[in-house]
Image (cartoon, rainbow, N blue to C red):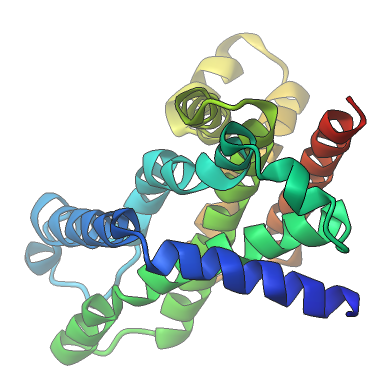
Length: 248
């Protein structure tokens, strides 16, 4: 079997495990309920009088993902280690990176499915007004890339420990740091005592900084590269950790 066939096999196995688990459907329902509640109630969508999803809908995604994505990713490798199937998986005729990419893609596709199921919000805004659907599409892309970055970080923490709870907590802490690094109150605080170069350096590592442009329809290559690089680096670190376990 070639590399992509191996990746598809692992991804199919992992995606099948998601779709046969009741927890997956609980995740989807919670995500959709949160999106609906914060868009129409907290975000006051109907009172804004504006045919746009920027603000009432997409602004909340970094915070939804902060807890929901680690809940999806915490089992990726921690569960394999706990039940002792990780060693079996890594001794099969596939490489570690193929297993990592396959499991990651399956989870990322699952998150994409949950995101795609928010389409009634798009239909609603198109029914009520004349929004720029190009901006909405770019915002969806940014949201999916951000979910992938959170998930890749969860892959690292899941590979580090047998405990899903520990993996979840570590993922939340790391992702929270990546949010707060560019959060306006934190940036203003840094501006009070740090140089502009330091503020810009910290903000450059922020998910919020790179997500804001995408959710407003600005497809900056630098923002896309940030998320892709973060995903690639996190998966590389996951591979290093797993090879360390296998060697040990």
